[in-house]
Every structure is written in C-alpha cells, then in structure tokens.
Image (cartoon, rainbow, N blue to C red; front, side, top):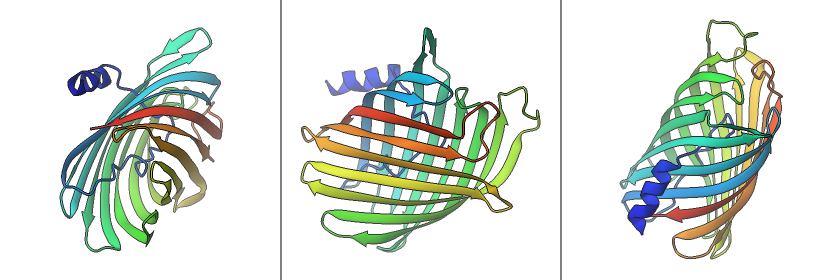
Length: 251
C-alpha cells in the first residue's frame, strides 16, 4: 500500500499556487531522527487573475539528525479555468536548518519557480538567516525568522522588460502551532518580504490551516492563504487568495 501511494504521488505531483512558498507549514514534526515524508491530495478554489479550480498534490521528503534538518519539496499544479485546463505551475525548494541551541537555529534555502498564472516565467531564490524559538509549551510553540535573500525574476508579460529583475529582499516570518486537542491543531504563518532599497516594493503572505487527525498517519486539513504583492507582474492583481482542503498521509 505504501509503495502504491508513493508512485501515485510521483505521477500526480502538483504545486501550491501562491508566489511565496510557506515552508513553515511543511516541516514534519517528529521526535525521532532519520527520514520522513508527506503526501497531500486536495481540491481548492481560488481567485488569481480569474476564478479557478485546482487539483493539488504536494510531496516532500526530509531528513533529520540531532542538530540538522534537510527538507526538499517538488510540486506542480493541475489548474482549470472555465473550459481551459493548464498545467503550468511548478517549483522545487530545498531548505537546511542547523540547531545551535534551544532558542537559535540557522536556515539556508534555495528555490526555483515557474508560474504562468501569476506572470512568473522564472524565479530563482537563495537566502539565509537566523530562526528563533519564541515560546514552547506542551501544546503551543512559536518561531520568528529574519532572513535575507537574493531574487532573480523574469516575467511573462510583454509589457515587462526583457531584462530580468535582480534584487535583494528581506524575508521575515512569524509562525505558531497550537495543539487544541490531541488530534486537532491550528498552524499559522505570516511572511513580510520588503526590498530594503525600495520599501514600497513588498509582499505580505499569510496562511492558516486547521488539521484533524483521522489515524496516526492520515489527517484532514482545512485552511487557506492570502497574498498581497504591492508590485506584482503586469496584468496580475495585487491581492490573491485560496481556500484549501487536503487529505494528508505521512510516511
């Protein structure tokens, strides 16, 4: 059964549609070292340039030691708008965490993204910075990340310059996980990504999900995300959002 699910996930690989990838929600919480993974299957409705219906699967794999965490995510998306079907939204993300103390970790990441829906022909990211544990109790924990990143972006729009945009951004986030009941938890993450040299060019992204455990490995998620990009690609609205439902299987 396990092998069949893994093969199915590889065949149906698909992507989270927002321009900012929320890797906080993708961390697999485990008290043991070694390999872990997750497969998600979901159906969402969202408003980007127009109203769309999305069939999504999300796949990830992570490896954990006592002090190190390696996480890789590879996705694509099947999207339907009116009578048209598009499969033109992919990304791959790799993240590394190094634990220095109970309060401090160092993060480094790189990402490649292609998203015709939001006007991104190619986007490359590379960044690093500290991650701080703000609070940890039996049922609640929260973190703050203060990262810097280099961004290379080439847009689809004919109105855009053929010269790619290359900028430095600050990528800051806050996140918390609240275990309401043993089988129910709420996760929220909010990102703020300004350009230090042009503060009017910024993005705000917030994502929340309520997760219900069905079995030890299977759970159901309900949630959504909201993105405000003050300087989007030409023809793309500043505000985008989605409401999402997933079945998630851990291995």
